[in-house]
Amino acid sequence: MSLECEHGQLARACNICEYEREIAELTARVEELEAALAEERQRTRLSEAVIRENEELTKENMRLTQSRDEWKRIAMEAKARVEDLLQDMREIGVAE
Ligand SMILES: [Zn+2]
Image (cartoon, rainbow, N blue to C red; front, side, top):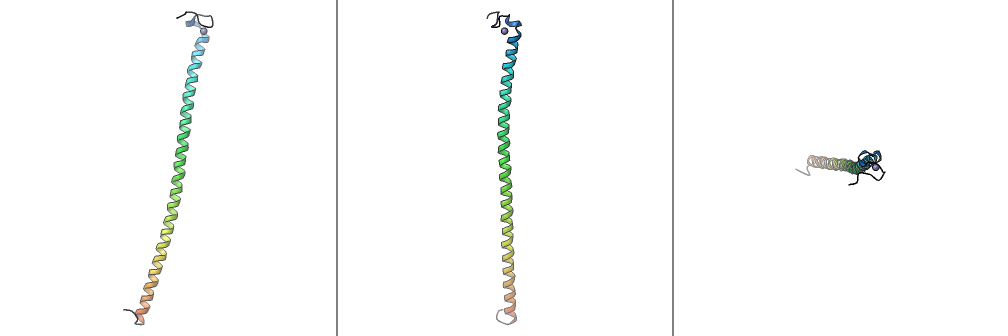
């Protein structure tokens, strides 16, 4: 290993060599952080998509529950109507 660096100085004492090493380290660190940030953004997008999907499912579930309750109500009304008719028929002696 040569004692003199490409800047014409003693390699161990060269400020430019030191800066270049620091810049290379910082550049690598910045790339690492950018990659981590991109990954985090992707994760955030995914969890936002999951949250939106969950909200849609909740709304759909509410709609289905409402329509089920509606059908239940209609069925109960029909049943009550049949009971009324049977009662009327019993009163006039057509049914037991
Ligand atoms: Zn140098």
